[in-house]
Image (cartoon, rainbow, N blue to C red):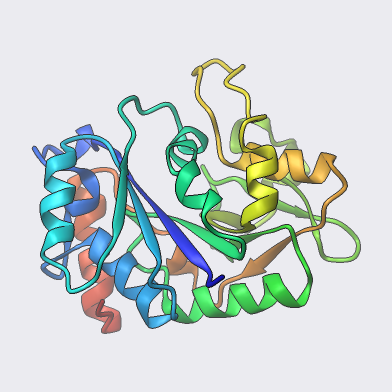
Length: 249
C-alpha cells in the first residue's frame, strides 16, 4: 500500500497570543499547516491524516478549503506527541507501508527532505528513521547519538545530556519515518511514566531499538528543517527567513 503521513496539529500555542490553533499561524500569508501538506503532496505523499485538538473546527474548516481529501482525527486531551499518534491508530492499521509523522508547525520541512529521507529509510531497511539536521546552536533540541556504523543509537534530550552529548550539533527535527506495522507493534507500549504524565513519540524509537530493530537518522541538507514557532517573535522570524530565502509552500 502507498506510503502515508500523519501531521500533528493539535497544539493551542498559548504564547502565540492568538485564538486559533498554532498550526494555522501564517508564514507568507499561508498557514504553517498548509506548508507541511504542500511539501507532502509534492513529495508524492497524499494519503494524509491530521491530528487536531484545540479549536478542532478551525482545522476542519481549513482542510475543507483544500483541493485534497484529508482525513482528520481528534485528540481531546493533549497528552504528548505519542498520544497524538495513538489517536490515528485506526488510520495506521489501514496501511502496510511507511508513515512519515511531521509537526504541523514546522513549515520548512521540504518535499526534497521528505523524499530523500524515505529513500534512506528504505535503502537501509530501517524500522524507523529520524529526520535530523545540523544546527549552529543545538540548545534545547534532542541530540542525535549515532553508533559506529552510522545507525541511530539514541535521541538524548537536552535535560538528560552529559557534557559530551551537549556538544553534538546534529538534532532531532521532530519528523520521523516508521514502518507502519512496526510502529503499531510499539505504540501501545509507550508509557506516560514521566513528570509531565505524557506519551512521547521518541519513546517509540527507544522501544524499537530495545526490540533489536535498526533505526537510522537522515540528515537534512538545510538546518531550517527544524525551525518552528512558539510565539509571535519566532513566527516573524520564520516569515523573515521565508522572504529572504525565497521559500514558498
